[in-house]
Image (cartoon, rainbow, N blue to C red; front, top):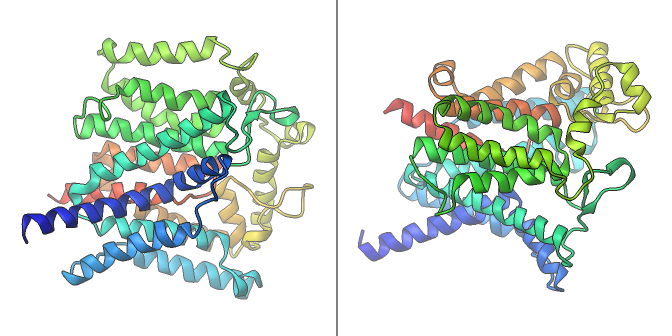
Length: 399
């Protein structure tokens, strides 16, 4: 292959990865909202141009050289068919006949992204990580622009009533905070696995504070939980290096004692007011806790096959129809059968084996992120990047 063809080949792969990562991270949606604020029509057919076409190019490229890769896809197909049959035949969820089930649809997007990524050479791993972090930086920039300027991107404002002390927006800011948490883990990965001393010339601690600030503004308990594993990993690795520890702790202390834009930090208020039993949850109508209780009760009604995904949290409390706590949501949806299959799939994609988990701290961080994420959220398309990085760690372990 001539040098010109190699250059063109590399650029096409890089561009395909750029489109794919920005789509999985949801950066294009935020860019569309920003353009709309200036009267520019939103980007259309995003899934076609930014997901299907890049993946198709990456796959066709590998088919031509007989190196197509579908690692671990069999377990996903088993889960997909099992869940579909349970919902459609056992629980009579007829929605499945007209459109895909929510859980299957989410995981289809995750697996599509994963297939595209694992069909690229390993040397593109750093580019994929960089694209992810850049995409998240862009989203955070748009959020801060909306919050602190006259540009209205997604009606981001200081919340009122139930959202007092938090941010309110047309788009889900909790997911943005979660992306910031994963970016911090990836910065840690770049620093200690690849020995990169900065991210494209920007000191790591500046980006960490850039991401963490929004978590405090949004008062996101789930995102704070996601930070704990990488926080402990960093302090353990640098317990004797005060030059690295002090700037991070100084920044966190500043966030803690200052008001930023609110009179008090609602994040810590929300943590202290967390319900721990049904009586407390009913007194304040804590929806998150009631979701767990109602879905667990539905699981007890049918522990083997469950009551169906759309009925997982129904029947006990007004307005509670599903649980963001994925553990009881899956238990109530398909009982122990679906729960075991589902989390075996999680284990295969985000850990692979106990041997790697015990030896590789990065696999431990990635798996911890996913398992903690399920405490507050449903799976998200950006999981494809995490699954890909675990796949890369497997390749390293085999060398």
